[in-house]
Length: 253
Image 1 (spheres, helix red, strand yellow):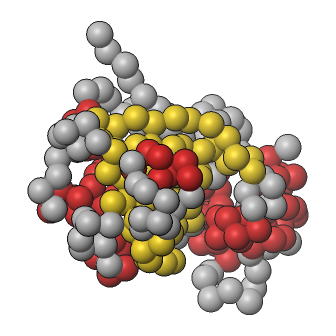
Image 2 (cartoon, one colour):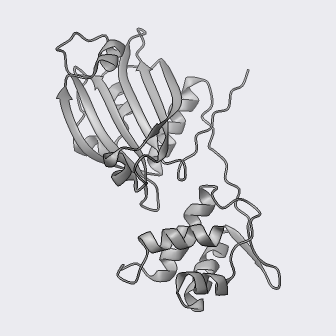
Image 3 (cartoon, one colour):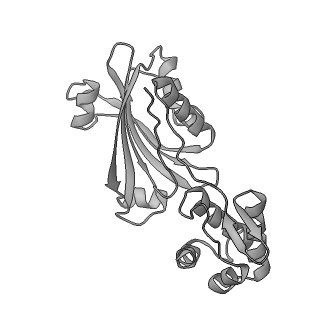
């Protein structure tokens, strides 16, 4: 089953036309599968010969990719027994209280890259206006962006709405700094966050940006940020590729 899935991904994304060496393409593809949990802990990996035959690459290329995985501690190789996944994928918990959640978001920002698609002040849809307590014609700052992991793969698509009187939301700044910290620079302290998890199918735009199939099931996270006075100042909707992102929360008494 792993070979079949890998062969399909390889046909779609890899090839000799890329400037990236074939061994590194294979290494990156296998690494994504392991670190996302798609290739589970303890699962036996294909042999070098199986990879060579299935992907039409040399055995040397396959060996180098597997050696890189072993060097990273993602797999263990044993003579006569094959290779097994040693990496355990676990969702990084977002701990309560609120400080733990914000720290977790800051940490994710340090290990990923944001690309801003647009920043504009527009009248938001009704459900956002209601949350932000805006009148019918009042505007909010709308930011559309994608987030990439350390391997350069887009794993999240965001649309956020922030009260228009909060300043500093430029494309350059949002790509270098978290939105929460920009909000706090305006003298606003985030006192509470309410979030809802769900699912949504990818439309054409999101499917293209996240490199998934049209109508693919995505994890949906809706989050409302409250200021120190109990008012919602920011509304965010995030869509995540579940193959590249896991969300965990640890709740303690």
